[in-house]
Length: 285
Ligand SMILES: C[S@@+](CC[C@H](N)C(=O)[O-])C[C@H]1O[C@@H](n2cnc3c(N)ncnc32)[C@H](O)[C@@H]1O
Image (tube, rainbow, N blue to C red):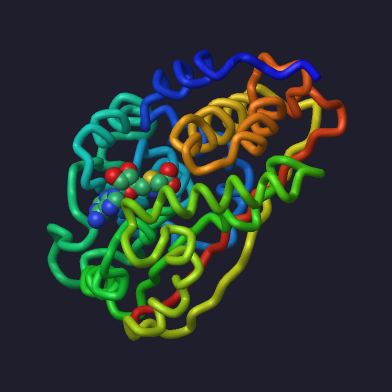
């Protein structure tokens, strides 16, 4: 059997991709479903919202677009380089005053009590150790009756290698191990599943959830192709997992995931993927 020999090329691609590029690819991959999820929130026209952990700012723009020309969004991210990337990507996307981007920590928000009509936080909460206190900080800056909107991707329910369940499970297991080094006692994957529990403990009311599914099928467009190849296969399932997989799983992963492999799964005419994310919404009493 011919096995792909592209591991060094893989590594170079993964290393070349900045985290800002990873977020941009991820956001663009999810854009139609993300915009649908935002529309379903029916955020009030002209409202003022906060995007905690805004990354490269695309979600902040989509949120601002959803609340109309008199609405405003403040995006904060604790990584100043992410705010710089956001300024570059979306800094001039909207009329002046509609979108502000600045460095800031979601666990100690530089804003007075009751400043915002809603707080949005997408794929960030699992990075925060003290989730309940972070949610209470979101509640502090939201007006009474205002809304807290948490998006978490359901990464363990995603499917990127249809027909290869055992390998995909091993890759997920290795990713959990990998995240534990950063996340501590609870992996990011576990924390993502405890969002509702944390919202209840924080004292939020009227907690609801709704799951959206990103589905893509062959022939993939460039956005899906680049996201799956460069972010999922080359980066997330790249060299950082090498030592956490046995030789056979690594070889199979390379045969299916390396772009230059003769068995590359993305080249199959019957390829498809499934990627769910959940919106948890609640009100501040
Ligand atoms: C996975 S990214 C998600 C970015 C964006 N929300 C999106 O959906 O594309 C997580 C982001 O959260 C930011 N972040 C993590 N902890 C934070 C905190 N305590 N306060 C503000 N931002 C934080 C990181 O710097 C990173 O940009």
